[in-house]
Length: 570
Image (tube, rainbow, N blue to C red; front, top):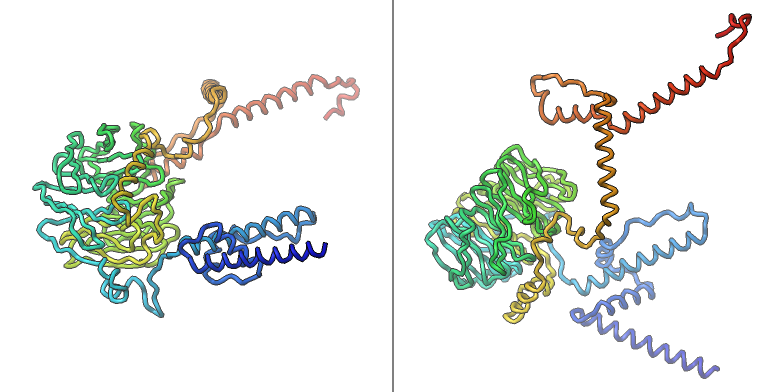
């Protein structure tokens, strides 16, 4: 027995030494570490009682579930022990996730930091370029193209290529990181907007009369004659749909994989030049001249949502990467932040002049262009900020036409009346990319494979709904739907019967008031305050009838008194 115990101890020591060697090797080789090894490291740190480093402690906060509940008031020992064990497991899971993130997501976003009384909004591009490395400094440039301006800009999905389109017919594709011109052509026609399709091989151009599709060499591939007088373009990557809106306010959807026209919808709201896609559900948002923002799907002839956002025409719309917040700009000079889940306003900012273009980066930075100036706000979607994060003014005071953040790079492209500019915006992009989603360093073979996978994973237009979670939900049975409809019909019939019998109180007639007291909002508020539900009126009538019947029964049950005692009756 003693020999066996000694053998087991030696065996355990050997396993422990092997595990420690593996952990040490995994720590040295950070790039090739697996999630299992990262979890083993976190477990080893906990078992040894090692203190967490400040970096891991900071990462751990993202995965915590808030402060632990107070367990001193719980008298049940069993329940108290279970809760303590759960809290311990939550803490271990947070540490494991933070440790794995340290190895698997090594890059972190960095922001500008000011010292003392300095403010980051006063930092100029020249000062930023001087402090960064040579590779990052090359990412800031200016292209003086006054004769063919103003320009609109667009980046492809991995941020490697930049597409620019001049109003006077100039088109070009650049590998902007290497300062290499891929294609340049002159279409000799007005260009209103440009948009990359599923990759950098094809792009769409909204020209004077029709919309054209060109390849990477600048050769015209298709002429979309159904898209007439297009003002703005938008591409839905998961559905391979090209959406356009024109001068007549007509929204069209074209399937770029089959060439079919999927949707044709008249908005009936006049000229529309503002369009943006919500990345969460692929619903198209349009901004109109009456101050409303409408959300559309190719499956519906009417808008899914209509929101009154501004008191004048809407000039720009932008959605964040998760599709939860929406930013709108109007001619009234306000930039409003909306919660798309509740369709309610959160807060708003004042622009120096009406903002012409908006964009939101992958990390949530909001860029707004007004006149020749650009303001960039940090954490502006979740909380209202008092001052911008950065400010920039284009050369020679030219008017800004378009702004766009580059994916996976701390860079923003600007199209203006003097050409095209690229500026550095620290902390704007996601530092860690997923090569299966978008790879900035993809090879020719990887690009082909990605294109095939995208076509195989293509979603049908019928799946564009306001709440995509409903697609995988359980459908109600026919009996439940029939029961719900019968209940609604019964309530409607009861309301009609009560109205005929006069049980419902008639709302008082509204007096016509002057000096702004008869606005639509106040009339609606007064009308809502006078609403009396059907059930409340019916219940009141039933209670009143029951009290009357009880009073009659009580009178009938009274025993008559003798005449001699009737004088004492009360």
